[in-house]
Image (tube, rainbow, N blue to C red):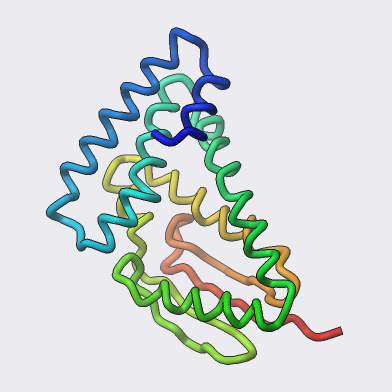
Length: 188
């Protein structure tokens, strides 16, 4: 359990609830790590261990005492730091180009089944047809948690200066795919 999660639990829950939350978190983490060790590829397992299992385990632990919307509160706070980095990077055309190259590189792993439709100096347009985040949330009984990852994209990308982010659907919100459109903003 990382220090930010520990701090959140201690401030959000009382002394009686905190140990139960921590125990459920640890049990869920251990179960998922053990079950998926031989199922997922190396990159998938690394990504799930770092970015997905901890969120599923925390969400399930929070749900003992909170409704689904209250349980999601913690996760929205986690994307704020990354948002700052992206907005800094996206202040220049060079930064936007670096952002697009990094994103394209990430799409080449087996964490996402994606189709790049267009990638040039004007835009990056791609679809995600299958998503490990969505698959694991559904597998572990909390498919509604995937919508947080989808909402996090808007939180991070909506206010970028040099690239405009557009999307009409996501797998996490019952779409057929996730369509990502990063289009250069007009100069001026």
